[in-house]
Length: 433
Image 1: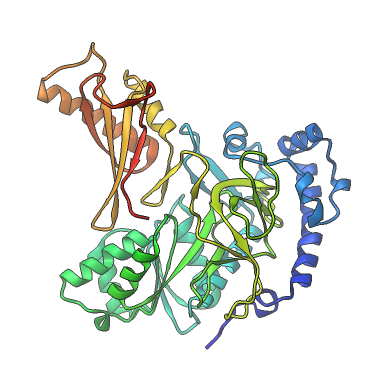
Image 2: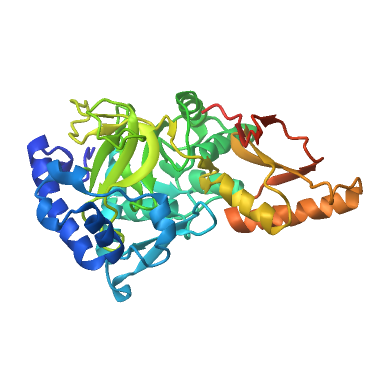
């Protein structure tokens, strides 16, 4: 069985990987300086020029990029190539409704698909496998990323997209799908649905699953593995960096290997912005060293984790990132979608409400739920059920347009949401992740 997609890179020595990173970083900084005026200005403000960056050791001299830079530069401010060289975009939501739009040249797509191909092979995939991609397609990166990776490996690729569970199960059984790619919550739901249909793991051909786009626990991994009779592998990515495949789990299922020939990872103290030594817990920062259309330098992911480098039983030498333990901002990931409280505030204000609300996130039948309790103002307070239902429906529609997912809205009496030191408790996350 094939163990690696690109063995010479995946098992390269630390010295060789550093040599690759040094060369690509120098070239990338020059590319950004010449083609991205927004970032060039940030470099000039910090007193840095491309001549100051001679190796990875100089990376700390460069300024950071954050989600606020993506908002301020929307839509084309961080584009690094002429629009005629862009062959595709992907997008995810931003903090106030402005979307993060990521651009790709054909070369960018090729390297992204190679990263996903490595993840599939690490999960035991080969050209003999049938890979069912049940992530959403379209602007979301999940579907098309793993789709391209599967084709790179040479697998029969089933672009099932998300939803329509009965059809998903039919294809798994009829086409003998051996690997499934989707969110972990959907994998758990598939398992429950199969159980309700009277199917056991012996009745389905799946051997592995590649799951990402949302947080999930080791307990959830065990449940999925038992229900589906598979090995469940984690995958990590961000639209800003390309999508899933920035890092992936191997047979050890103990941390994700970062594709270091394409991405340089750092851990920083989120308050002081100081780079921390290997093994320290802090905020994960990524530099994409060969993505040309959307060349992120020192992008602050807001994810909290650790990086460790050691011998891995799979033979790969890439540094590992631990499963993120939380975030330094207020972003929630709900059913694979980025949700910011500020987006909900925007919708409420547009509909004439004050920003007194509470977000309650839960999980039912292994699917995330999103409930939003909204205080009515004294002027609009009413006990007319018909009127309340109409107002709730209007807010549901507005939130769906802003977030891309449906929320349940409950209007409540003025001042009924508990305050703490004068402020509402904005988010209650009841998921066990």
